[in-house]
Amino acid sequence: MLTLKLRSFLILSLCSAGLIEPAFSQTRLKIVDQHNDPLPNAVIEYTAKSSSVKSSAEDPIYIMDQIDKQFAPHVLIVPEGSLVSFPNSDDIRHHVYSFSAAKTFELKLYAGKPKSPLRFDKEGVVVMGCNIHDSMVGYIYVAANEHTIMSDEKGEVSLTQDLPLQTQLKIWHPNSSVGLSKHREFTIDQAMLNKPEITLMINIDNPEPRNSFEELNLHEH
Image 1 (cartoon, rainbow, N blue to C red):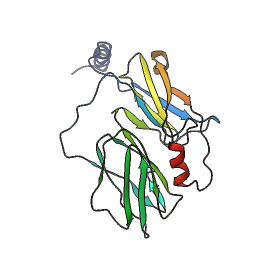
Image 2 (spheres, rainbow, N blue to C red; image 1 turned 180 degrees about the vertical axis):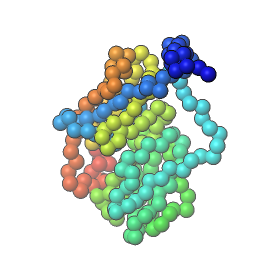
Image 3 (cartoon, rainbow, N blue to C red; image 1 turned 30 degrees about the horizontal axis):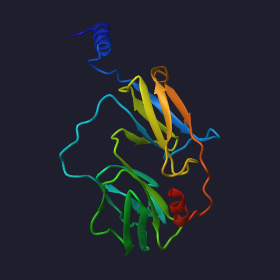
């Protein structure tokens, strides 16, 4: 049986040789706005040294629900080519549609679950609204990059350290001051990755109360 000291030495040696990664090899990334407030629903795309092997299993179906006259989740990330279902969990009917270049579609007035999911096969941001309830606005972020994650309610995500010495980050947020179709770009170097936390700031515009889908659709273009 290996002693604790010998086991620790072997693990450290293997980590140094690059044969295994240490369990603590993560950096917390925190996204804040110009007031230093945490920013949830920020979408982060980043570069990594390795890629995961895509499964040949049946396509998963992602869910964009409608609850209490709101899209749930408010922002949904799906890989390019994914299927998305739009169940209506409210006790009233909705009429969901989008004019976005990444996916134009219409689900006419319905309750319950639509017959078939929709395929989102073009990279980009899809802004959705309801033709009955004009204040309902939601977003589907169709990602071509598999390394795409979203900040939680604290504005935080974890980055593994399987990253190049110069890591490029692209950050998107529905309220970003640069607009719906653009990203903020950042470069993260190895010295920053060695820190336990990195804080990045993006400017946002506070939406007007009950901002309509039509207004947001105009700003998208």
